[in-house]
Image (cartoon, rainbow, N blue to C red; front, side, top):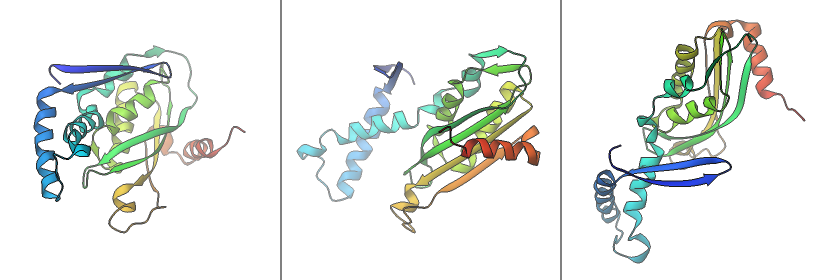
Length: 209
């Protein structure tokens, strides 16, 4: 985004940076003023005066993944290492927006790869999840994009991705099934082998307690 306004906040040791393009905020806010009127609301009443601007900024944050190159995120922390066993990062929080209704879906991602000469900083795996999740998505494509990015960038012996999410388009509208969970998976290389895949699935369901 050009000419962004930055808002920085320290949170649990990480710096949060929200970038807002003033032109986009204005354009989106204007549309939401019309939407509020179309819904029968008064956009000039006290509680709604800043709502169009807030929504515009929220949407920019929730879709800021379009402006980030996930492969560059991985390449920024790649290291040569003679390690060839499974690396698993599980219970990664996922928050995304369904592209069909622009309602949230959220849950957890479990990711593994088997290094083939290179490892990556562990924090970069959740970061890649965020890059693709912060776009208008469907869960199936999100799963494949994460898998493909890790496979193509690290060139590991295999990648495994499992995502479990609840979809507000199912819980709040449509069939209104509040407790349903959607699970998607994608595998490459060694994880297409039944034994390796079973080990991964066992590890992501195991408790350390």
